[in-house]
Image 1 (cartoon, rainbow, N blue to C red):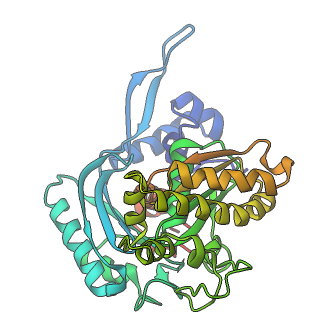
Image 2 (tube, rainbow, N blue to C red):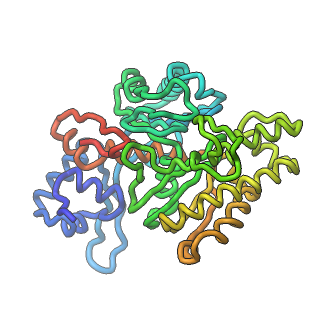
Image 3 (tube, rainbow, N blue to C red):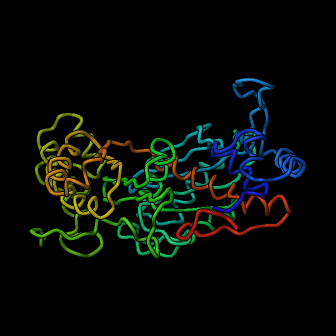
Length: 393
């Protein structure tokens, strides 16, 4: 572990809650009092650090608390799904200050979709009285370097530079990532920060997984980690997937596949959210299909759990509801090794965690120590592609 000495490192310690008084920072950093004071004054002058309140004291003068000023700027975040999108304006702690949502088809291509997102962003910014520091975007496909890479359900998006499109409009760093990755990041930071290994499985129209290992999103060598929706299942040679293969998990158990089956049964349904609506309404066919799909996903997750050995497995997305999760549990605990599941928590997540993950991605990049030090020195720093790192350097 390196000794934190820079202003950016000091801010990180305060922002993460590892050291929130001058005394604690001096102990952690080894800096002299005068040097520490000078660097804290830099951060305060830049509007990044505030001081106020007092720490409980067991004797002597109580220490004043330092805190990251999470209200001095805002973040724009968007979550794009297959048939719907939402956008939010938040402070740096992720508190929502404004929100927009509506039907939006990712299959219409990047120009119209990002154009609509930009309109929402502009409208929300008009209501804000603080500068925007960055933009975070969640998409339902693999991402490398802020570019969507060979997405099965995003025609026209392959290689498209999301950061260039939105960066030109708003003039701030733009980071993009896969929705399951951002759901996992959001869940980890908000609810399970002490979990060494966490997996989020998003089951909506398609299926994907996000992994947080050792506190960092694991993306693989080119952003493709967690793409479990395209693991092929035996026994389904006729199930054609959007990727062109046969027998993929998404083509058997994804919301799109279930919607098609319900339509064949005389219950017209167009997406994973439509399947959920029918489940909530108590439609017996939808409930049976949810349980079936859960069991098929459970077969794949049994292997994933044995390989990753997570402490928490979160089922999220449109089909994150009790009938589906019961099917997952039924097979997962029967198929996986007892050692892999003895400490495992299986939880039901929501459908909006990607926004929180997108905000976290931006904040952790824009306020990374190297990025803060460069800004304090007056140096312009480029955005690092999200497929490699969330930090700016």
